[in-house]
Image 1: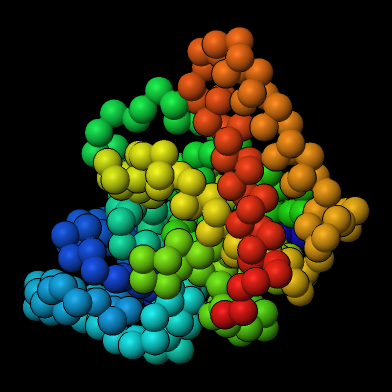
Image 2: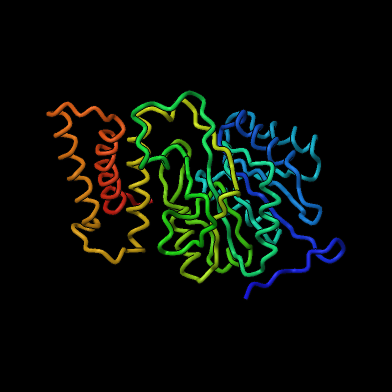
Length: 323
């Protein structure tokens, strides 16, 4: 049975703390803050935006101070000197008190309806967490070799036009750049894993996967909402094959580290799920056939190559990465 709170004008106010971790992205941070501060908010939704500066060396602090002067108590500044996005997220959580915790990245802008959708979703007291799509905002036109099965590399996430429950069979995970979680649930599952996630220029991943699976393991109820939209900036520097290779390797390394404590119910070979070897082998064979036969599908050809980088990263993360 769905239970809804009485959210009448004088009866109840919902409190949302938006956590915005950032590292050396002062210009993008300005856009993110403008979006968060100027988007309309329901009258019964109290919002606070906390920027967590993860030891930036640019003018991040000045950008936040300017936003504090312009928007008053809507914005707050926290500093986290320990490198790593997970450390910044945990600092943001511990320094706030709202019953809802929203997580937005510094290269994003929210849709004007974002706050209203959050308010509507959590008026249902059975919902513990929500997520939604990432729509790309391109700096340049995407290249022809862009593989559609690797859109996560550039933060393009779209799980379809329908509301879907987050479950073990959901085609994806709760992505940490567009997520809202009840504080009581997050306190139950524990903080973000600090041995996973990006650290400075290191593209290590896995903190979102770890959090998502812990949420499901505790029985938390979540929904993918297709209209909970954020717009994710995709710079030209990410639209290179070098970036894709690095990202896939370090995403694999994060998954390998994650797998040390969360082994999958599948056959393994040398500590790695056998299906990863199979996919990489098929990719190599397909790539060789394309080279010999003059295959002209650049996106498919590059996708075959990236399967090998996935495997290499996973093997490294599982056997060699210690922190």
